Length: 134
Image (cartoon, rainbow, N blue to C red; front, top):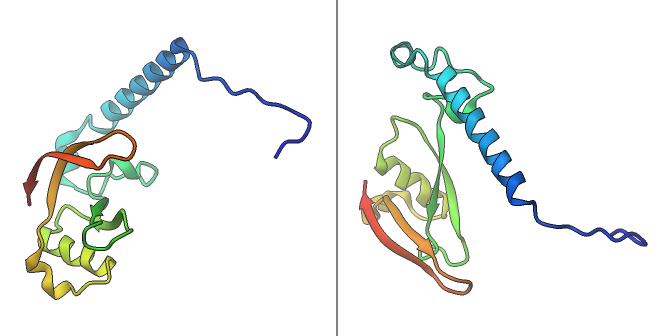
């Protein structure tokens, strides 16, 4: 708490937001163009040219998959599972079941889905518009 001093926070102006957006997109564009200049050599030596400072763009690095299962375990929004390019859907389901403290041997009763939808207004539930099973 700050006693005796009042701070007034105002939202950034539209011009400042636009400038930041342009800066971010140009930086991302430059980073990706430098990173994938030699795309063929990157794929041929997958993992050999990965820059440890660029974890989010490494092709061989694992990714975090958020598995939403509030109907599986009430009160839990999602559990994180580490996925690699060689992970199968069955392996990911088993890992998610372990995270939810369920029996991974029952992975055949579950499927891994990619869901597209939108969140409703405050107090409304998520509304799925389409999904695909992996």
